[in-house]
Length: 202
Image (cartoon, rainbow, N blue to C red; front, side, top):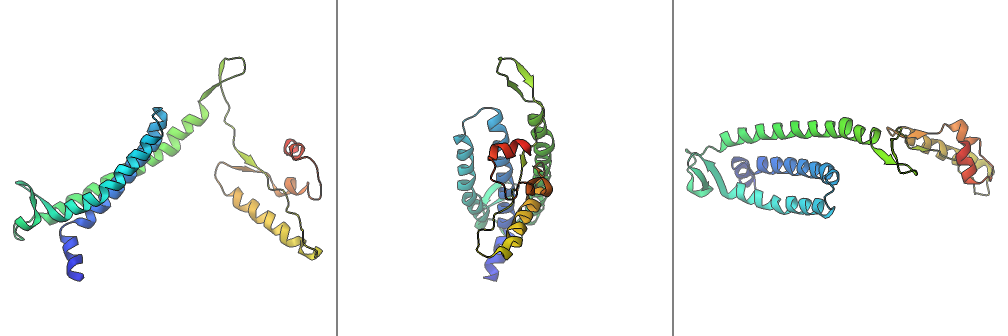
């Protein structure tokens, strides 16, 4: 088993697998962002994902069976150990991994802080009159109304209140989500008002 593992390392199978996974993931991220912007059908993203998954075992098999040499691609069994350049190819794969990772991080930062920000703040929408006007950025908001103690023991009231507060604290940690404060939400405790009325008051 150890010998097989060492052979996988010598033939750079692990490095090829890592490069393929990172490159495939980056490809899917780019497709997920650009395809909707280009108004391409949704099934194309699924097709790209399928091709990436199908290609993975072939990439691993090719890395195991073949080796890049100065004379071109040759079967591994036809390349002598003394003339093999697998270590140099491994260093090149390490550099390729670092470059692809840097591109992936750059793309994620661009998508999060530039592309998403621009699409949420400058996208015009058609008003009822048919004219287009810029829309102010609206933060999604939510309120956690107090849970009702439905048990026969009135002493369990603290438990339902604790659940409400814990849920409120968890939601408050989500970036970009505006959460109504505990004081505002718990003002409706014990009331059976219409939810739409409570929503307007909040």
